[in-house]
Image (cartoon, rainbow, N blue to C red; front, side, top):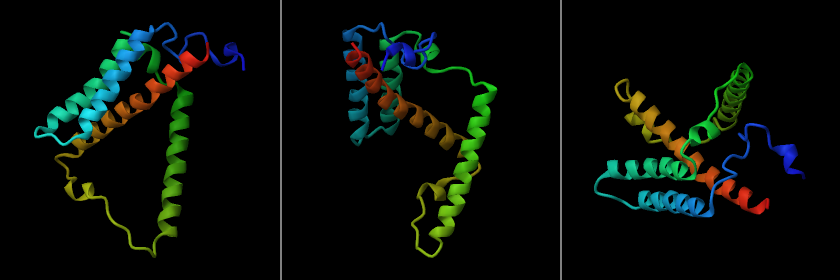
Length: 151
């Protein structure tokens, strides 16, 4: 397949084409180093979160100082309709699956017992940041492989 067919003018599909090999290496080292550090039990859990989150953002910063302009873009009206459609499909599938497994004994997620009105915002924020860092953890190696294998 021709690269011109899949690359668009603003390079948002496959950014970081101009990144040097040393920057890729340092970025991956920091990214996976943070993941490995966060995998071990620590006396200070806040340090684990800071290292996990910081390694993700730092790895992107090493690749490109303006990474946020290349990875994040403003949603358009079409994107909003797409999100609403996906949420509706998700809601329908959850109802279907819960009816399908209604006769089976399920184990509740332990976080449900700890959620209350005081900490729901905190739990949601931590979850969103964690999901974003996990996306970085999988996108950065993919972009590295794409940039190096397309040559």
